[in-house]
View 1 (tube, rainbow, N blue to C red):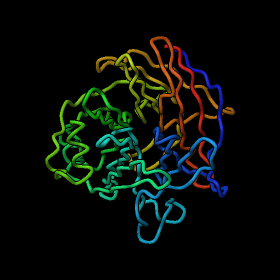
View 2: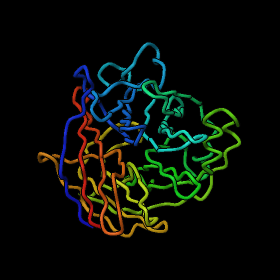
View 3: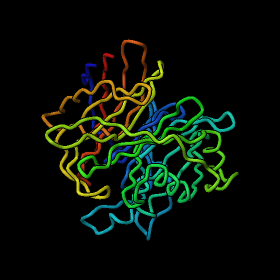
Length: 306
């Protein structure tokens, strides 16, 4: 593979506020929904319109945004994953917490309803417990950061911490059962978690690469963005030495290439969306977390030669 960046921009809302800590992006209605891991709102970008906030969760102890400096980081819902889904013919997005603490085990099903999206929130703690058991992990180390639809399954990716001997991994959940649980038709405990798979993406600068998001290509292959982050645990940030794009085929990592730097800095991609793709190329929209609560996240268009 080969990757180049053709365009990049800072993400801002209509009032000039920065879109902080972008962790996922998904096609939504006629635009894109950008999810932040340190807030209760997403940002909705639409053609010909200014970006607006979409409330995903109520305030947590009166707070809408969270950071280490204010002592509120432990309260954040840590929404790390967004996946395009369709419920009863209505397109929408499933936004999911990382599971790295009990506060981070909620799902938000966002459905398109014109200019006022409908959001259903569900506490999915039993599902996270099932994922930890399937991957043979201590629940405290769980850190789910990406998902994509593969056939009629939702493939959910655990970032892991390779430097601590915890590889990236995934599990599969039946998509129809996922949607039923998300809207409250069935209990979260009824969801079966299966097909655990581990992935070895290698390392960069002596730090293991770990999956931060995944998208599916038309040919059945998957593309995963990955970061080499020297972090002591799944909840605390560390320096990112490098990032990469990996191609996964039939559960095997078949290619890993470095992501270009942006303005001399590591492009820490945490969310991917396919704009278009065929057997020879893919064009992706990527969002980044710059690990600075006062700075706007970057969005970039990536051209990938497969």
